[in-house]
Image 1: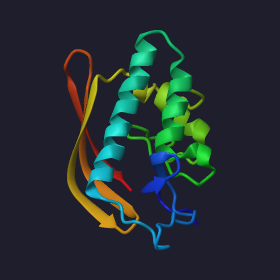
Image 2: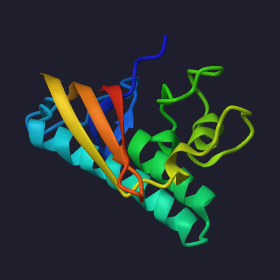
Image 3: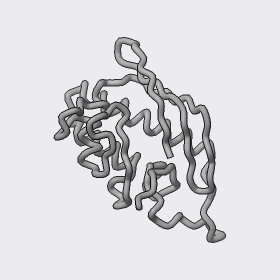
Length: 162
């Protein structure tokens, strides 16, 4: 069975990947525990990635390539590990197991309900963790994040990142 995506120290940086891989060993041979600071860094990278995709779209650039790059970097699709992706606003196809389905949600694509979440655009994303569980080399954070649009409007959404 598939594991949920997790914050994990990984060769690709602070990306979200499944735990079907072996943890990276430390000098002592054990997996290094993830820290609150690393969770924050992963969330900051996620927020910056979403804002960047919207900016590329607004500037007339290749936003689909930017969206795929962000998904590869932050979720680890390019790593070859299994990834579970649950789009915030999807209803008809609420769970996405393939990278092409996640890209469709982020920047529009082949799934009819997808409107391009990351190309809204958003000018800022702020995380408000209500709780974070640090569990060895993985972590789970739950809370609310706030997406600011160019007119200053704010959309609040609940999240669980693991």
